[in-house]
Amino acid sequence: MSENSSSTASTEPESSDSLKTFGVVFKGFRKRAGLTQEELAPLVRYAAATIASIEQGRRLPPRDLVERAEDVLDGFGVLKEAARFLARKPGLASWFRQWADLEEQAITLYTYECRLVPGLLQTEAYARTLFAHQLPPLDDEQVEAQLLARGQRQQLLRERPNTTFGFILEEHVLLRRIGGLDVTREVIERIIALAELRNVELQVMPLVRETHAGLDGPIRLLETPDNQWFAYCEGQRNGQFMTDLKEISILQRRYARMRGQALPLEDSLSLLRQMRGAL
Image 1 (spheres, rainbow, N blue to C red):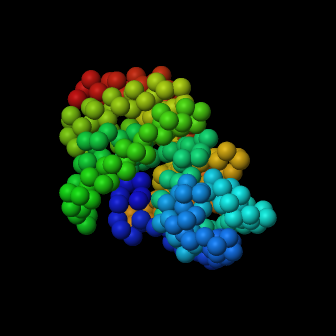
Image 2: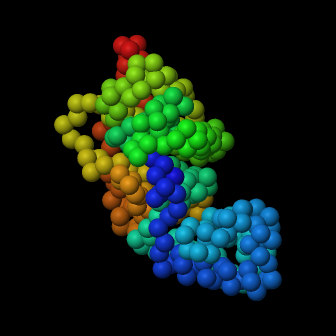
């Protein structure tokens, strides 16, 4: 599932040689222990389907799953070492599901968005508008499934009070009035309320800005508990998961520059309140 869409093409990450290699190693240790995927699942506290995806090289293994599997399968440290190498592998292709897995562990999450309100900040009505008008069209069951997944993901903001969430969003995203006046007013109110949380940093990039470091598009940056950084960039029909430290450094520098170009928190909140009052 991607941040802003739910096309079937994006429900699983694109495979890579490094993911496939880790999957083969993982499967070998599982078989050596005499366990089926179904038997291993409760021992590592993940679904058998997740284990299957990892063994097939279609999913980046979550860090806590690797640590539990290391103990359960008596991996001699091999699984942990292989996973660390996998995380450092440059150019690892993926879809958004990998990013969502890492979000659940992150200690820092930075998001710059120039197209629409970021998923973590959306209201149900705003998200429903996006899903209901998606092309190709979704049926009612698919729309509801996407809304449920979006709502579950948004719990991160309150369930992870020690995680820093940073957002820079463009003023014009709200001026577009997706869903109409009532929907826009509601999403502005939600953004204002979330900005009051101690772990949420919010800035608005003003409509008029003579210099702008983010003109190449949206940026997402993430820091894990062991201080590894990842980046994610999303297009129309796919996403690119970045582990190359040089590429991540460029995006970090751009995001840092934008923090100086965007309005500070109090000015951002003042602008949002003005926009809400004008609706």
